[in-house]
Length: 314
Ligand SMILES: Nc1ncnc2c1ncn2[C@@H]1O[C@H](COP(=O)(O)OP(=O)(O)O)[C@@H](O)[C@H]1O
Ligand SMILES: Nc1ccn([C@@H]2O[C@H](COP(=O)(O)O)[C@@H](O)[C@H]2O)c(=O)n1
Image (cartoon, rainbow, N blue to C red; front, side, top):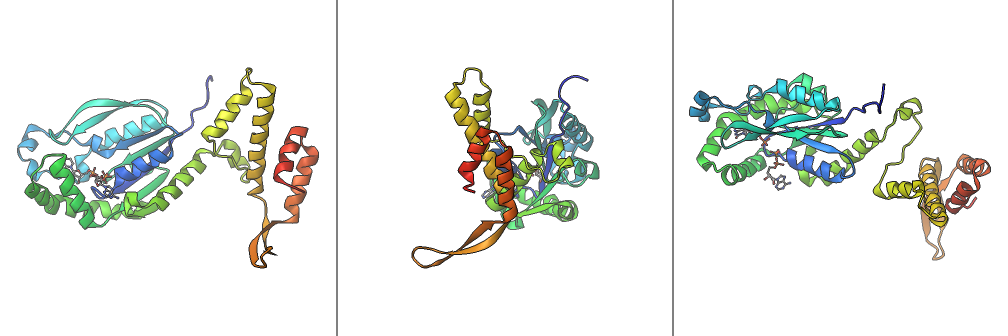
């Protein structure tokens, strides 16, 4: 076998009612994962094109029913991406009700699959590593829908309201809401919920950073790679880097490792009295933690010892 073994991407499903904020949540995750390869796939891309007969009676067509989507194509597309292959995903036109030219989607570290019914089919659900349901009140969803459909899709407000009461609301109650129970995370207020988005992104980062070694050694922690860390690694690998810079950046990297390690050591609560006489409650490393640092100092090279001494006085 040649080349690197293919690492399966992390697949996130984002479901919820129409205009609940699914795409907004997906975009916010992408924004925060700027240093990873992330792709957003929209279930809307897999709407069946309408036949001329269906088109002539478009007001009777239920776009909120699971049968409105080509789920087989969606499944095979996600399967391809999961196996590290590029795939052509159709572009759906809400005005002509037809699929047009495709866009090429390349394999990524994270795939976000967003759509009203992405939790409906168990085969699609089972491809997901994380399932998010965006829970937004019906009146907010309707207000956003009216604004969006009249301004972006050029539809009459009467038609939007008819479609809502005839298909959108009943389908939400019958097909979308029952899939909420499959969610790992339910986000109230969608894109306004920054706390939920931060927690989700942290979890994804942890999962992406998990090497196979982490499965063998459950107490192994991998420091999250930032542009700063990658920049310093680039510098210390560069044959053109001066000795002074090599020492400077190696030292900074060693300190980062030690500081990160200290964060995993046991501690106890400790109270101290400050110079002004008030009591401050902080933490104190346990004896075992200090012993561990001393051991590292004994075994360490002179450079790592230097880095260690800067973060631990003992
Ligand atoms: N938190 C929010 N506050 C105000 N408007 C929002 C918010 N989230 C989404 N929107 C707007 O509502 C509309 C639908 O949002 P979108 O994320 O596309 O929903 P969905 O993907 O669920 O249909 C968009 O016009 C978007 O700009
Ligand atoms: N030709 C179409 C296709 C779909 N819809 C509506 O779109 C909604 C789903 O999209 P979101 O991005 O809002 O999740 C769904 O409620 C369909 O009724 C449409 O109006 N016309």
